Length: 588
Image 1 (tube, one colour):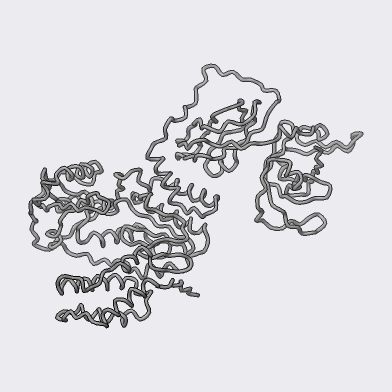
Image 2 (spheres, helix red, strand yellow):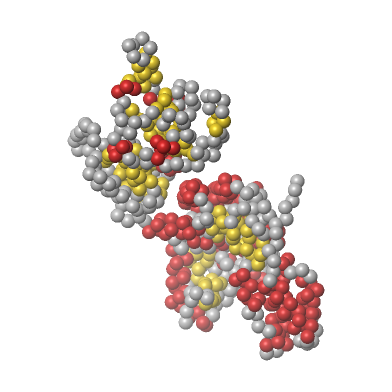
């Protein structure tokens, strides 16, 4: 194939014709830049762009060329490519005008063998973790062909991950490529990552012999299972509807904050600030023995106590305080380890630090396009207790006495203390970049752009990392356009009740099925509490619920009549058909 090329020292960009591009393996990409002003003053819009390679004997130039139809020209080399060849010399005194690019006259350029020029992508066959400042042999899909391959590394790999391969000659049917991590942090390389391209190479190869060369480290037979699980959970946590480029950008940023995520279910972070327990003046130690049922559940307690000892959550105690343990069966069949702190709570000075109102949190979501929600791994257990306050948390099992080194569940002030600590850790990011409700952190972006969301998410993760906190990857969701938040579905359209939660309303039994009037009143109170949570979706809620509200007043006889039945049915119907509440847009 004869290619008509022009060297244009006045052109700042290189242009390739669509006809020539079609004959190569270079990919056509979209062009988001400005229109191009031609030499004749005409403004044209490129068809796209392509990252191409131009080879002149033993020198190579690479870069982005615009794809544009040109009259009688296949390739226009601008100064962006010419600079890579070094110098350009034009000899007008010779018998024939001679142009020299670099050290080679242009008239010595021979047409390329198109079969040799075909490039093939080289991709990894497995995920590999590459430690900082080290080299790993990475398994690849063997390049096709029987000839030596000229390997050209991926420019994006170097820019985005600080990984490099270098230009190299690969033997036919090569199964690995050595990858160097030149950064000061370990880098995870996903399965299917593109390392670069290869072309057949049939020129002379000068062999170099290295005596006693140091072998490169072998490919790890098995990547750490915890890391594999982390990256699998990370794939599930990222919005699948994002473009591939945005997914990769978000994934790289999250991997940079890998220290924020717990590697297993037993790994718990530890905040750098210790909390305290304030007792009322004159308070005496509470002393209670284990419940009789505890002896039957001794084996379960031993297992859970052992896990907490291993996780450095509890320690052996010699305290004067002692409260019993209760095991609660969870819906999934496992047991929740609970300590009965009612005695301690009675003598504790209450912390009145305010929890944010759910309605305020939901109202702050207006204008958001992307949402990320992060759940801390055993959130309360990541806040340490002062040493002098640990003895107050002592609990007794059939075996011995233990005490918590961190905030335990069940203390009266734990929710307020945790909320206060998180507000301090996240500082000025609250209500502008993220919202916190107990141990759930919701990162909210108010601008309809992915980059701004990424920036704010990065700031939140940096704060958590500095504080020493750990997230549970499987409970996190990143860059979602629709998200479940505090019993509601939030999207760019607005807010609506979570359909799963509304099932409890639809299946709520009649309030007259209680055995006693007290049971019936409690049923009414539970139903009103459930409906009240979603009252912003019901017009005239107070009027509609009034007949049921009157039943809950002290001293009021329980009379279930037509008004009460109608109120019950109307509230059910209103919730099950609740509209989406559009975000209110406030203009400055």
